[in-house]
Image: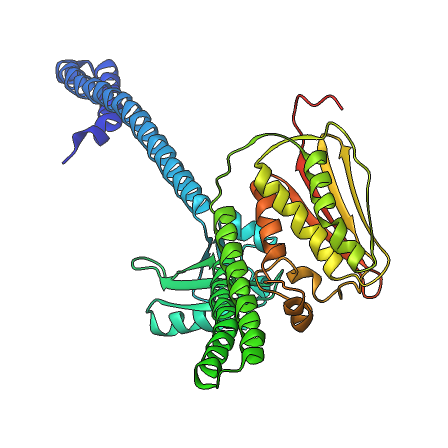
Length: 413
């Protein structure tokens, strides 16, 4: 039995014994002994109580310190998990078993505009029936699942959604959404590129084979040989242009370029001079003012190809009028513009005009000797030089292609 709880009683008994000794003289000896005994017991009890109280205070302080340390450690680990979730290339959600939001990392909050929406249903945030079905399936089966989902809110994206239940503790769910839109786009571009290359190469090769077989099986017809051999040479030249453009495009996409100081005005002037005869043969006026001192750091051969492709295209797709070529310096950027009076480009084609093998008018493009790679080469070469390319066009109103390239920093003009 813990006698400390009787210390107050001992004190009272000592007081009563003292009172008895005072009022009953014949019992004074016994009373004094009782006072001494009960008083000593009470005193020791109070001393022990004080000691234990002091120990309890110190222990309580120690425990409070440990609790604060544990709380700090929990906060540190929670912040680390938040940083980890925010650093992942994915949108992360934590949901309860009713599919209500408990947590969303910064990527998810930014994409869906989540602010103080804890407790909202997932479907109310994403507006996606596919995600709702995926998470409900995991709630029902308690087995993780994943699928590719197309989100239409707040903007169209393709995501790889993965949902899995919490292994221990509460019946919560984790949901991750990884954006694969660009990956799917690149896969589509790759498939289209392979299909287009196969088609572009197969057509002249089929033509060459057919003509060669005709010459092989036919009689000694000099006129037929001359006509077919000429066509064979043209088809071979077309194959050569395609392979040359594919090689140029591959170099442009490699991301490496050797730059030197170039006078961009001189490059444009040289290309215009080279194409003047072709423009005159089509009855077109090719105009260009020759500014001086438009210096850029770049690969002269690649810059020449940019200019040549754009001016040559303008001539090819214009039957009358004028092709205007201009170069200016605007806030440290060299701007190059080619404006034609051709048929123009419909607005539905403009977003894809710089894709490889994309043609607005396939028949006319092939008839003009185009490979379908010219504008794609321009785009990649311009971006390789740290610039940007754009187009403004409308049907029957011509087109204007513009290129902006960084000028030399020490260029004072």
